[in-house]
Image 1 (spheres, one colour):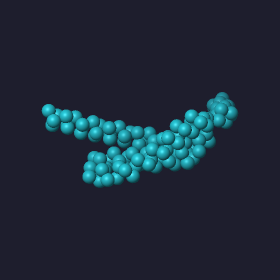
Image 2: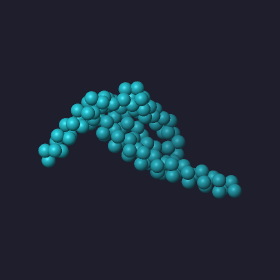
Image 3: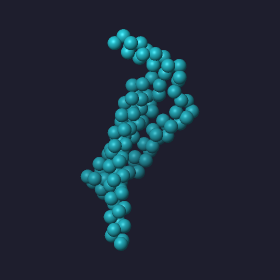
Length: 114
């Protein structure tokens, strides 16, 4: 029973690492969009890119070098700053509605011309 429980925990850990690979790519995609948008500070996008790379390195190191992953995990805990910064920015500052409307109107005019 102990072996079955240990196997279950190990499978969960590897499954979670696979999920974090996808989340790392999600963070990189959001970082790209935030860096190129005019609605959020670019610093948040840069921090999200670092966080996404951190998730990818952490997950792949679990599969390729488990002993190394245990040592480098502590260095990637600071990357959560990007997630917290994005959440706080959205809660406190939000998105500038006038700029958003102006951008939407500009895209609407471009779509009508095509």
